[in-house]
Length: 420
Image (tube, rainbow, N blue to C red; front, side):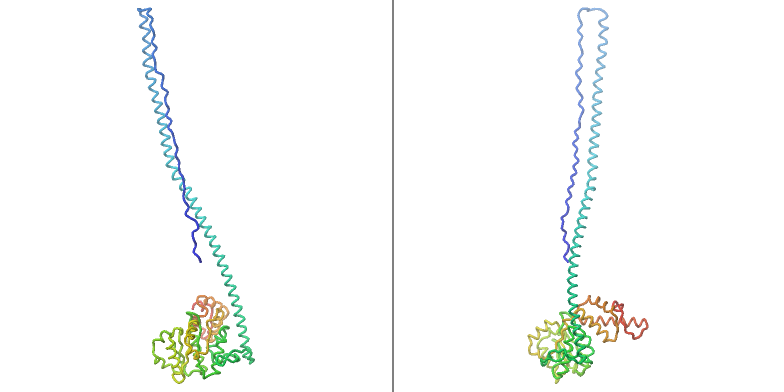
């Protein structure tokens, strides 16, 4: 899943808050009063003497002090408009201060809201694309799974038909004998090879198992060594153990002793450590990493006139193929190949059915459906891990039955699978 990438840039906040009000104080200019001019009465020199002439000019000085205080009130009205002019300036300044924070919280949330909406829209669109891609991939996987399931179903049907034909003695199914190269009937799995019966139900593996065991019975003097081919990192040691147990049950080996060792450990030890394995089986894990000269020593040590044990190699198919290509001198000692690497999910469920039956337990269809769910957490083809999980399922069944007092009922339920 590709990580989301922010597809839009940070939104720039451009808020112009210019509330500049050029208020020009209009000062009332008082019109200059006309200068007071005293009319100079011209006294005619007609009556230079007489009492009436000094009485008449007396009222003339009286109007002189009266007009002098009149221009004094004029500055008073000039001061009043100055105060009024000052007030609007204060009010104007207060208006400039108050509106400045107001538009910021009003417009910024709008932009934040828009950014949030854009983000939500982008996320929704991305989720739709992701869901569409997931749905397309799921569809492709479902188609591939259906095709694979159909192929496995046809293979199982062929295998069932072959088994029925072999049991009916028809001998129709013919294969190439790995020893002689001749066409021989495949036949059925020997009845005493009980620990291998669960593998004979797997379409991709059954032929290898049946052919190997029948060929060993037909050619008892040939080497019985086996190579089990698995996937890289997948455990197939349990398959080797099942072959060793069936060898002993069929009296193909003289001892039930089984020794397991990793290739790197085998490279470091002396062969005297294998002296107690006489007549049994040696399982080498990750055999593609064993030193060629060491494996040559082991093969010689396992000869019938020496310690007489069977060598079972397990490992990744590519590494083992390279190993045998580089060491042709030991190829003839390993005739039988078991291809576990071909097993798929449905084959694992078939393996579970066989293993549960082999251990004497019963289980209904819901149990196997739950096993499919549990199998999703592990690898299809990792036999060791899956069989270990089934062992825990059986232990959970035993514990539950013991608590419920059912004794040896040995029935596996869905809850046992979930508890394992």
